[in-house]
Image (cartoon, rainbow, N blue to C red; front, side, top):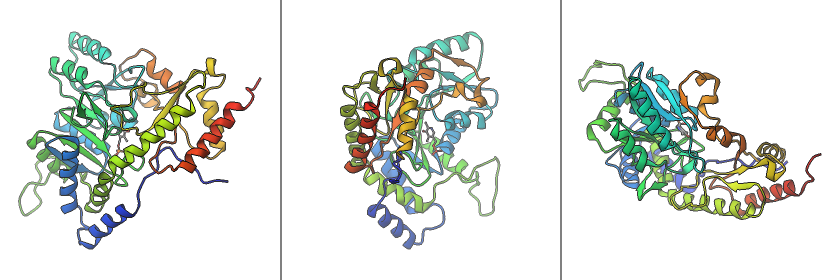
Length: 380
Ligand SMILES: *Cc1c(COP(=O)(O)O)cnc(C)c1O
């Protein structure tokens, strides 16, 4: 059996090894150290924000962002239903209630019209909303021009979950620079990885300082351990920050590689009836993290799940888009404003191997498997 091809494997090599070993030999094994500081400065410059705080995960960054904006038990936080569970889980960590919005059909991102409707209704009902948390799905930034304007109208902060969209942009500004606070993830399958890690981005110096304080057990600046509030152990280690710096130095190259993967799938499916590349035709602002297709089974004569099972038999990973949060048992009672778009995307979407580690032989293998599937007789 051939080795398994994954959706998005870590893309690391000699440069990462060099940075990691240099950090190791520098003696900065203890958490924090010069690579953390440098990683924060380099990432802030890359995204175009004033401050970056390196953390142990994107989820930790979301948690601290919500705390920093004063979100507390009983508050409502309006967020996207089309996301990974980390977004809504963090909302629950602070005791708040997620309110799920359905998606735009072409991108799967938060629908600004629904945001306006929901905030108007919630204000009318006297519900206390504390923040808006849009998510950038699979590498395309949400429509922040409208989302930020609507949130501002209601006096609400925007916490942008840009875990998937590092390197993407919207209206000439980078993903990660749009929220009052934004977060990134460097988990193993993301566009760049620190093995595990995340970041909080802000232009507010005091917000960044308070985040660093909360992320290091809320220690008061005195010689003995003095605490006046509950803190967290959420900082990124110096070794992992070194890995992050190496990955960041290669980010544009890795995005370029994923862009070729997108083009490859566009060509492969260009004349296959009932199949379209998810995300629309305009790739200009994308970071190409993952490439997905939408399958109209009635037209195609096969479903996304048929292809997924076939690829799995060939030892090639593919996966449905995120199962929307309002369909998850754990969030089934949460309030939501739905149109059916995200459910349809879940049912008809399939994400294909998209990693920057895929070489032309891997892609030929995927193409061969898909061509074989497409020429198989449709089961009666
Ligand atoms: C990956 C991801 C996260 C969580 O990041 P971790 O670093 O794994 O904690 C949050 N939100 C979205 C949309 C993600 O894809």
